Image 1 (cartoon, rainbow, N blue to C red):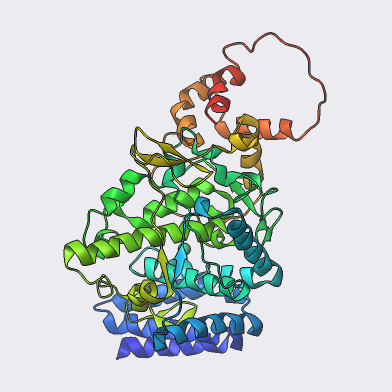
Image 2 (image 1 turned 180 degrees about the vertical axis):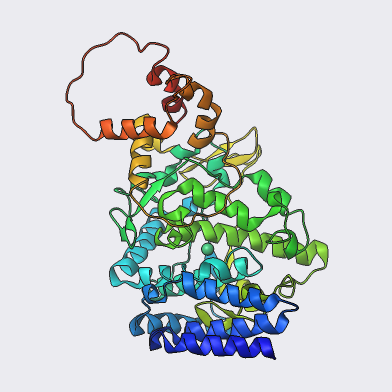
Length: 481
Ligand SMILES: [Cu+2]
């Protein structure tokens, strides 16, 4: 009782400070705070208060800047979704397909609707939700897959209002991972996501602005894409707690593994508060949701577990009965309902091929018959240039102009990333300076970026670079990337 009282008093004080527009968020926090207090033992009241202070102190509520118009829009989307859920209205079930399986017209329509949302402000209204308190209430625990499922559904409802034939495509990044050089994937061309090196200046989202600056990416610098192997091992398990924080082993942790893709894409996508400003977010999370759905089907068929009720026991922000941050019509556990994939959407399977059926039904995918897998085409096949040393340096320099804030956790960077390669050759970098004063990678990168920013015109002819120069040492970068 004491714990509760302290919480309520504290919460009341907080209510007096900010304006009316954020009242609903604060109400949620009051509930969460008192709930935590009720579930607490011993000196856990301190933890509850600490948590509350941390949440309200670190989240600049005014920056949430939820206007009445935005609130109305988001509530109307929730209303549509809620209506369907409550009445179990049997509307046409939408099918989400792989990005490279869409026809030219379908892709064009999807891009147009996203651009339409951006122009009207709807895109940013929804992207604004994925920050602040959401960073802790929708990541790092049981609420992760369910919250993101509902979040994507709101984007999808908004798309469907523009064009009823649409659904969110998914980006199966294993088909890029299986390429020799994933950075050259066709998805980073003007026909798909647009360029992945630095400011986005080509494709449907060219020159987009976000609250932290121009839309930017830095693909392949660090992190890792999904591999078929990582998904297979995750799908060998039966209980939701086996694949989510805080109980999952790192190699099976869906939340952690998917963070690797956020980091691999770089730019806004790599930041917890900024990721949703890049539409890549939607297609990546649709794939994460597909993996979760495969896991759920397997739970039912092989494990005798009902996925809707297999919500790992959690307290605080991830407690099953807590209201979903941003979508207070729902409780966290509602994200686990079987309703969504039964009545609202489902997934077409990932493209596959075999020796007997050696094609992938897409102009943008090749069948690797030896591995019996579909693999993404390289954008160099469309006449676009692949990633090279200069584009890599420019992407790094442009990414460094953004203040991304806290980044996603990621498994260790995979071996083809720039960071992995540079770490491996760090001794080589150090030899560039003297042993007592080695030049850092940062100083070399900075020098390259600064040189690249001036226009020196024609250069002197020179013999081949001598073995100790960066050019000779790091030629591996231009070859590899
Ligand atoms: Cu997220």
